[in-house]
Image 1 (cartoon, chains in turn orange, yellow):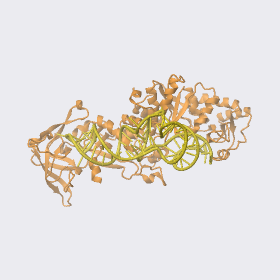
Image 2 (image 1 turned 30 degrees about the vertical axis):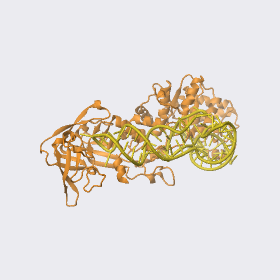
Image 3 (image 1 turned 45 degrees about the vertical axis):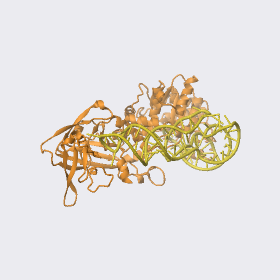
Image 4 (image 1 turned 90 degrees about the vertical axis):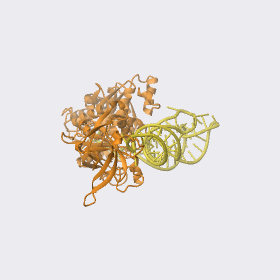
Length: 558
RNA sequence: AACUCCGUGGUGUAACGGUAGCACAACAGAUUUUGGUUCUGUUUGUCAAGGUUCGAAUCCUUGCGGAGUUGCCA
């Protein structure tokens, strides 16, 4: 369905098309292979949309495989959150949930195979010695003194490594390829290392663990993955990926294809840095709404559909690029404009008293729930003599282009009446306490009056006695500079000190009492706001998802 | 000249030897009971130099620029 919608295909889909037409494959199998050592972020979303998206489009399947070959870093906690995030994004792996650790026996057997073929050996060098022997970018490496160890000795040593006879780090199993290879990954890479740790799935069954390189391609082959899609930094691992497939009796022949990872400006994406933000308390957790994690984005109120459409617009290429956060926000607004219910909320209230409105009278006005979806109908909004409006919607001494309320000026209170400001009441410090205004009964519902009078602005309001109190958390970008990773110094130096502003006395239209946790609504003229899980019975909490486009703010800034 | 990969408006991406297009951003204007939405228009680009060709963003050569790679991480 979506294949017909997109006029052009990325280079990966073109390769798949070709493999299908040439008969190289008669189906398409992809996989998403996270290591369960952290939370997923929007960069992973790109890969998820690619792999699961291809499976959908081609009627194939996409496996979820946890790359759990390093027990010191991994945990089930991450397995669970990763599954949740993928589901939230709208994808499902069906019965195809796998773990690299499922293949430990097979991989061990294949290691023995290489040893017997003279293509792997046990190396007793320390990691320092190995590093020295590897050479560097310019100079070839030198052979390990253990490189020509007899097969029987290798078999014996490797088995004893497995049985836990040796200390961590004392020996490794290496492939016997070429110490002078221009690609460092081919200079006798490590296949197995000794790790004395409890694995979250295999417990203490293993004392040795395979490396990523010795695991990934073989796992793909065992699962009959046809196209193994990964990011660019694995490009120079591909010769090794292929070397294992060439030298092992694998059941199928997957192909690794690399694409460019996602970068976004004004944020960081590396797991290490995100972790530091959490552990050092710069954010409230992995799901802090300012984080680029899937859980953060979700809590912020970004719809999964917007993430998917964003991933579609940025495309798949091999060139390094940095996407503008504005592009993501534009996808978010597009979905939310279509779907979000509208309400009125006042974030920074000033009291307004309608002096000619009866003291105890309350009227209910009909307000459209979503102009993009008229079938949703209308809601009732109470209006009374005392109201709140936004402080920014009143100026005592307005500039020419200011259309909103000012002394002697008239505006429309949305869906209610034309209101004129007569008087400004201030305290001794000159702080505005309230505005005294009058309404025009001939403008009921906000209609233009019979005399043809017009106003230039319509502003939102909340009836004071009916208002719900709420906390609203306003988020801005976490970093003040476009590329916090670039340049000199610590990325933490680029943190935006104003990335969170908490408003504790926001006034909401009473209909908002029924908003559910996780729901994202529009506060008219302000932006989109999502109900935070911190909300309690007696106090609702909103996160600002993203503001509305604001051409007045822009004009004012000039 | 280590090796590999990559260079298209401000950003992201298309054009598969035949009119450089789309989205975001920006800037104008129209509509509007959200300074929202919608609609219209405008500005800005093929890294460079050679070559092949009737014709080059696309093919070739050279140069320039960027990224990745020297974990017993993935």
